[in-house]
Structures are given as C-alpha cells and as structure tokens.
Length: 314
Image 1: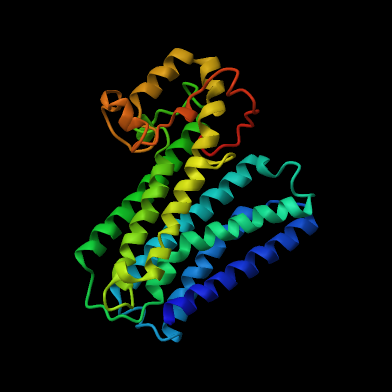
Image 2: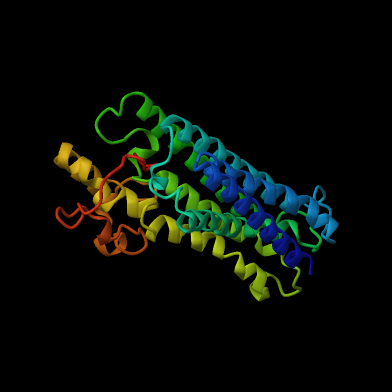
C-alpha cells in the first residue's frame, strides 16, 4: 500500500530526527535548536513524501495538481513557522519552557517525543496526498475550497504573528495588543493554525486509493488526527495555547488595565476574527466559539502560576 508505506517512512524520519536532536541537545544542555528542528522535520516529511510517493508507486508528483497544491501550502505554512520560531528564540535569548528541564534526561526526552508526535500527526494529510496512487484529472470543488481555506489560515497566522511582533517591537502600547486582526480576535494566530489543518484534512479526501472514496478509507480518517491534535494542544494543554494565554495568563491585564481589558474581552472573539461578538449568545460562546469558563481570570484561583512573559500571545 503506497500511502501506508509513505506514512511509515515519515514516522521513521521523524523518530530519527527527534531522537538525534535530543541526543545533541541533552549533551549540550541547550534547547536552542528544539523549535528549529521541529520546523525542519516538517519540511523533511514534505520533501520525502513528494519524492518517495512516486518511488513507492504513487502517481507523478508534478502531474497531480492536488499533490502540488498540498505540498506547496504545507511547505509555506511550516517554513513560516520555522522562520518565526527561530526569530523568536533569538529575540528572547532562550525558552522559559525548558528552565529546569534540559538537565533532566527523562523529562527533556518527553519534550522531544511530544514534538515528534505533533510534527508527525500534523503532517499526515500531506503525506497521505503525496503517497496516493489514484489518478487525478484536476482539482475537485472540494479541493479548491479546502485549498483556499488552507491558504486563508496561513495568511491569518502570518499576518497576526507579524502584527503582534511589530506591536511588541514598538513598545507594547496600550498594555495588550489590539492592532489589525487582534482587534477582531484575541488569538487570531491560533485560529489560523486550526483552520489550516481542518482544510488540509479536507483536501486529502479525494486522494484516497479506495474506490469508494475517502469516507471508506481508514487512512484518510486517520488524517483527522492532524486537526484534532492541533485543537487539543491549543485548547486544552497547559503551558501552551489558550490554556496558557487565558486564565492566569490574564493577571497582568487585570492588574494594569482591568476595565479596558474587560471591555476588550467582552467585545472580541477568542478565536474567530469577527465583529459583533458582544451580541453572540453566551451558550454559543461557551460551545462552538470555545470561549470556555476555564479561560476566565479568577483572582485567587487563577494566580497559582507565575507569568513568565514567554507566551506567543504576549
């Protein structure tokens, strides 16, 4: 099975890169190239699946528009992530996530394993597409819509990252960011990231080698782990995403400008850039908009952790 072969080799590439990175990082007691190696791992999977898919019996990469589009979008997305994280690490002179970690073999290894799992799961749709042996006469309507959504997600993430970075460089005027997309969403970069992988999953649908199509293909359904894991990391996991940016992470705003920030929060969507958020019913905010109660700042309950200022949403 071509797609299974490509997915298996992609897993092996990821394992080798992350364990090698860990070995050097632990020996040198540094996290300097952690994020950079994650970005390079994405690009290695894209390159292998594009070339290896052909070698394993897939249809010609350049003659299949879906493969070209998926690989181009994936490479653009992960190249931006690589550039942004490398720049951020340089600007900050380190990463507070690894304080007290990089000299502990087991705990430091867990960080690298988690990164490897994330890279691999995110990459499932593009590896699935590039490993396909099904013929393609062009892009379907679903392909076009999914590709457009993926491109929009990339644009939202890049633009919001740049707007936030420029705001920080200019001195963080007004205590919290409300420039550009940040006036319509409290975390537009996270929304862009989530949108990308749902659209990548949709784009992979027509690349199934099953005659019945993607809905009957377990491997295509496995690709759903890409957006699902992304949402889980950004919504639920402490130390990153919304769990880190909201809740106790809001303390500095409520201490410096409580009325102003409360007004911004009431009027601004947590993820989806939009206007009129104040008028959205609360039950919708708590469900489909993911503006969950646990993200509220509650003095006494939310002050248990120390804000280190290292969050991407600073």
